[in-house]
Image (tube, rainbow, N blue to C red; front, side):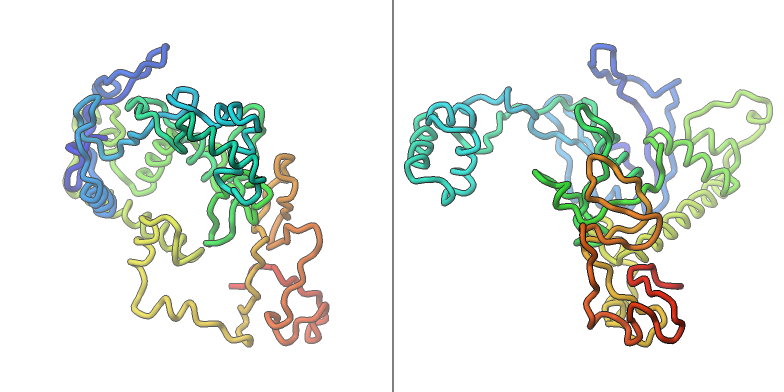
Length: 371
């Protein structure tokens, strides 16, 4: 998306990328020459304008165009990087690549003799840690957004990629509602996992979703076709025209859905590790609301419930072979440890015993609170 096509209240569609069979990308007119101007709600215009103002896009070296989201970074692939690599240092020093890694990251764990040999090999070969090749990735290229961001967010699982099967996204519970665990042993360090919210949804499926939302809002077919880039050659379409009032009603409907979505997200947690979302959530706070939410509730409150353990999971995800330690159940919070986790005695209500005296029933400490 070029920055020049982001305008107050609108977005302009002027071109698209087309991939040839050989993997080469070309800039072409929009599908079926569907050049159009799309109205954007105030919240979306504000997000885009603030992003462009903060990033200040510069012309790229390959096309001389200013992109709002460029993704212009160094190319992946250590094999293409010049200079010495870890394996070269290991071969020169007569040790394993793991030993070289230990010298670079944990020198105290390596004997002095091996450490000196590795350091001498690094100096002789001129090895530079985390050196970049200086080669930039192709500006027009396929993105991993659908596979490694969109799909995990909607299904709660990473897609199948040989030799690995699809498996739940390993999450760390803090900050809530969880962030993906990265690096070696991520599955073993996982504390929670996400519940699927829209299995089977794809980025293209959002066009269908947008059409459905417009149908629910009572948007006239003429305006829906204009936004989606469709052309209706029927007689009815010839005699129908889009008015400013139609556009305003659609923007109001989209804004209402946005506000509802933010409110639902805020009920999960009033903060987010994502800076943009965290700013949106904080902007909805009333004066003193955060202090009120953080104030501990009285134990006599009917909705009092001990905070769920850090190694708990909510919802019903199927047990997967790739992460057998992620034990889940059809409903409620459940411990992921092999042995049961006993709640702290100080965190329990006064009547909390293996069997509640007033009612005589068993207590499930990790059930969700009643509304």
